[in-house]
Every structure is written in structure tokens, then in C-alpha cells.
Length: 237
Image 1 (cartoon, helix red, strand yellow):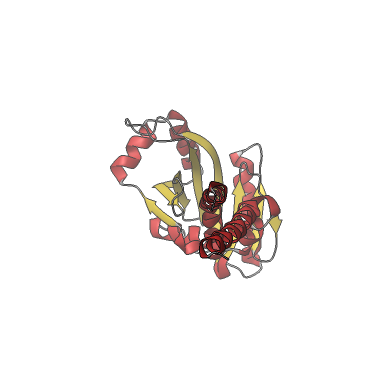
Image 2: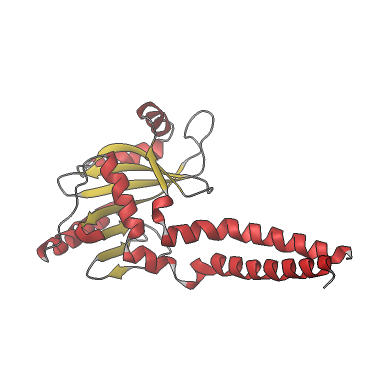
């Protein structure tokens, strides 16, 4: 058997591994969101990250003026992908979580490489419903019997919070009350609820987002075909 078929086999295997590394986390997010890991970093480390970022401090202060209190910095990771972080806050009276999304990375000195990506508000509802209001996103909006998702491209916190509170109130008038937003444990459970919501399943299934899964399936078919060819050549078939 010549070297060409082995070269094709190695290329097919590499392509399958590459596309699989992108597709498997997406498939897990779609069909098994409980594989996601969420945690809060320690209080001392959290404070050092916040202290290193004046912009994060500014956003926290702005949210405190609306009655939010800090829960800490929440980490989020799915399988082997790089973790992402956000500063989590809560307004227990209004039943709303707030988050300051962070992007970038951590330096040896703390969080000075982190930048503020945006702010969002989130209220988990009974029956795994959600009210979600974000300052920036490429994902779609939705108004349904179990979800209200709205984007505010300008990121105006006053307008975002007013809209969010109004929509939470509308659900309550229709007999759908909010879930507790008391502490870190409630925040982590609320995150699972968001990823398990019908909205997220619908949003993740749009074509651009499932392309990695399609590419993985095609690469896998190619690998199987090449493997069969190699096996036949080795057996003299």
C-alpha cells in the first residue's frame, strides 16, 4: 500500500479531531447543558480582580445605585474550552440578577487584562421561563409565553432595567412568578435554567451556530470511508 492512502488517513483523522474539538462542546450545550461547570472564585481573589479594573469598579457602582449587591465573580466553562468570567450581582427585592461580562485574560498581577464586554439582567421564572435583557448580542430577541429576551445595542442601563422590570411584572400578572435570586447557589442554578430554556435551544440551532457540528459530521464520514479503504488494502481486498 502506497504512502498516499496513509497521508489521506492522517489528514482525515486530523480534520475530524479539529472539527470535533469545536463541535462537541456545542452539541453538549444543546443536548446536555448540565455538563457545563460554574463556580465562584474566592472572595479575596475576586476583590483583587475587581480592584485591578477601574471600569469594572465603575460598572459595579452604577449597578449599586439601582439596589444591586455583589455576589462575586462567576466562572463558566464547558469541557475543554477556555473559561469565561462575569461579575455577578443581585437585587433580591426586584428578583433580578445582573452581570458584568468580562473578556480577555488574567495576568499574573490579577485582572488587569480583563475588559468589560457588556452588562445584562436576568430573571429566572417558574417553569424554566426566563426574562433576559442584554446590552449587546448577535443572538435573536424573543417574546413568548415562557421567555422574553430583548437586546439594547446601546447598553443604556436605565432603559435596560426599566424594560426588564416591566416584562418581569407582565409575567407575574399572568401568574408566572420569579424564582429566588438570593445567593451564589441560586445564581448557578439560574444559569443552568437559562441554558436549558427553550429559547437557548432554539437560538443554538440556527444554521451559523450548528455549522461546526455539520463540519464534524462530514469529517467523520470522510474518516470512516478512508478507514474502510485502509482496512481493505491491508487485508488485500
